[in-house]
Amino acid sequence: MRLDRFLSETTPLTRSLAKRALKNGEVTLNGEPIKQPATHIDTDTDVVVLNGAQLALVGLRYIMLHKPADVECTARRGLYPRVVDLIDLPKAERLQPVGRLDVDTTGLLLLTDDGQWSHRVTSPRHRCAKVYIAELDEPMEGEAAQWAINQVAEGITLDGEETPTQPATLRFLSPQQAELTITEGRYHQVKRMFVALGNHVVSLHRRSIGDVVLTEALAPGEWRELTPDEIASF
Ligand code: URA
Image (cartoon, rainbow, N blue to C red; front, side):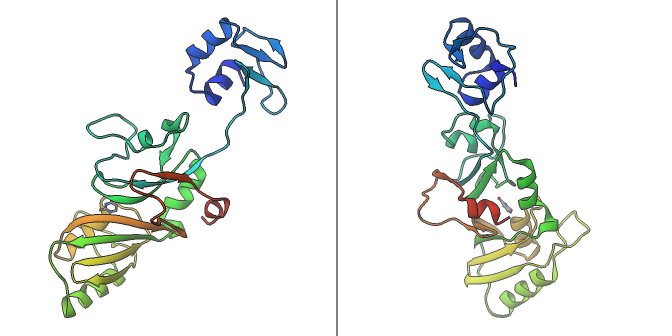
């Protein structure tokens, strides 16, 4: 890897600031001062030091965030803060949300720079269960609730689509609070499923994805790295 790229991947420096640090004599390679940005280094064996600190490439990163409302899952800066702005790690903008949550949806969001892992979590073929808690506009009880449970179990044809949703599980925690478990991630899927059932979602929270569960240990806006077991569970 080129030395300037190595510096920009292992520190908050941009490529041009890395070149400037090299020019200013702030970098040594295997103990010798080095100034040429195009120098090729072996990232496994060469020792690069910037202002006295030895640098190392970080591996792939796997993060869980308790997404608050009014934060967006986009890469571009817009009206709302971005989820990556909540992750105080170097180069956090390289992390990609693993499936999106709407700006008003709260709860579990995974982020990673491992594209293959992200695909395993999101691909409908892998049938990874996502559990949502929805507060509903209208109470659903008795026969109406049972009808909704059956519809969801059979699959619902959403407005503008031809293929019904995959069989899913609906459970009422109270007449106006439902737990919905789905294995796909269609656009606004949960909200559109409740519209198809004649209701509206007033607020939505994602509790879990596969075996990864959001607990009270993470307050809204807080994040942590996934454990090796959680990463391997997908
Ligand atoms: N379904 C929705 O409608 N919104 C989300 O944010 C996630 C799933």
